[in-house]
Length: 271
Image 1 (cartoon, helix red, strand yellow):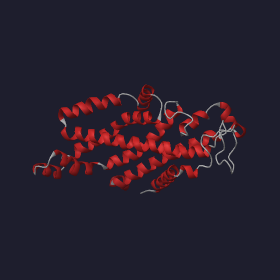
Image 2 (cartoon, helix red, strand yellow; image 1 turned 60 degrees about the vertical axis):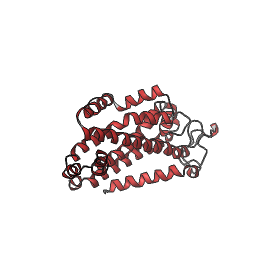
Image 3 (cartoon, one colour; image 1 turned 90 degrees about the vertical axis):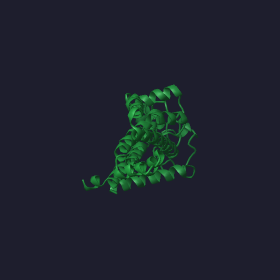
Image 4 (cartoon, one colour; image 1 turned 120 degrees about the vertical axis):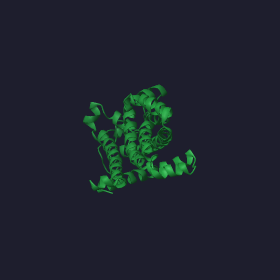
């Protein structure tokens, strides 16, 4: 695995540790306000400074890691599971089943830009963490389904699959034992890249006021609260630190995805 992938793994490992032990790592109460210390610059007492209401930015960034990783993990897990089942079903049976699933259902979801569809879903369902996760799952499964469908279409024609079918193996056994284990590798890469997309989508929707509602310590909410001109002039650190954490998290997952692609595909390694 290349060096960038190792760097990405280290960053994500740190974020996971921070998310798990957030109550012990945070130095202040994330909801405690104190207008007498608003807009303080980074210092020994407030590592990332304070925001417009005197809340400690470092503590809010630490607890924000919990929200972002929770959203990413749940969205990717549910989307990958649903997409794998539907994609494998369509690719294996083909015919009118494939035409309905890939020809109609896929195209309905792919006809709209992902973020715009997520905004519409959240606007319909209402703001909140659970509703945000549901909206991202509804729009996120299609990419996994298309990927698995293509892999199943290829693997089902292999000789060992034809041999299993000739020996009388059931469709469920052929799919679960022979096809999916040999078609799952690209899904691992897609999942790592999907984590980056889910984290970015959560931050974007929270920034727009359609995700995690304030005063929850979401990175997107923190950027939204710090985006006005007076805050940028008085305390640019209130915007810089959550923005840097989002950028590092997305880059780390992308580095891991690129590294997995090279590791799982010998042609990529040779290139």
